Each structure stands twice: as C-alpha cells, then as structure tokens.
Image (cartoon, rainbow, N blue to C red; front, side, top):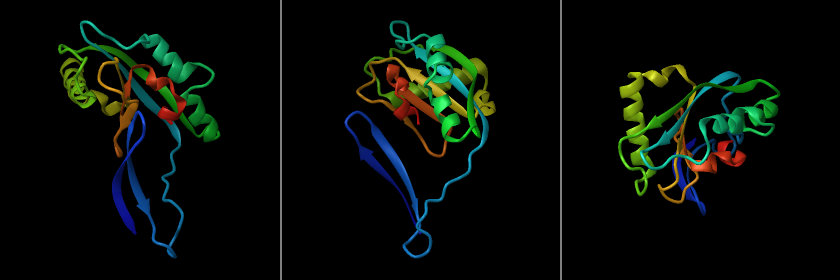
Length: 166
C-alpha cells in the first residue's frame, strides 16, 4: 500500500494531490468514500478598504447554486441526486489589512482570524464546506483546498470555472 502527497504545477494553479493506491495484485481500484446527503456551504466574500472580488455576494451565490450550470447542479447530477450542496450562510468580510500584493495564504489567515473574532470561535463548525472568495491581487492562481478539510479558497472570478470547483 503506497501513501504520499505530491505537488503538481499547472500553468495557473498549484495542485496538491494526495495519493492512496494499492500495490498490484491486492486491489487496483481506488479507495473512494461514499458521499451522499445534503452538504451545507458557507460563502465568505473577502474585501479590504480598496479592493473586493468582482462579483457581488448575490452573484456568487447564483453562480454556485442557482444558475443552470453550477458546481451544486453538477454534483447533484453526477450523483443522481444523492449529493447536494446548499448555501446556508453568505457573508461579506472586510479585513483591516491591504490584500493586494499579499500571498493568498496570508490573506486566508487574516480572514480566518477575523471571522473567529467577529462571529465567535468555532463559527464554521456547523458547515460542511467553507468557501473564501478573495479579490484579485494575490498572484496568478485559481484556487486551492486542503484534504482533509472543509476550506476552499478562490482567486476572484476564478471560482466560476466548473472544473475548478469540481
């Protein structure tokens, strides 16, 4: 049984891939965890005093959950209605620092700290997934998520790409 973590660099995004394979002869199929039910999502639109994501919070919600082709509709379709996502919380958060020129991981830390200060420690425990939408200005990247984990972070309008969300 082989386990490990690799980093693959693509043109606009760094993808961390966690591998979990069986050796030849024992079982060549991937180990997949069955996922069904309705998963709650919290969306955080992040801004500072001078910059904000291109899309409004309403438009972000529509693009992720309401429009005809969304990440939520694709998961539902691919699972034959067994895995569904709902937007249970949408929040606009202004950080005190200037975002432009900072690393996305730095901004992510500011956002997490401010959310805990504003909404209380453990505020995100009631959600299955949390999405941060950052304004542009933090580099040429698309989005990232850590596995295992519930947080995904996206660079401005790049959350719109279905392939990024899936």
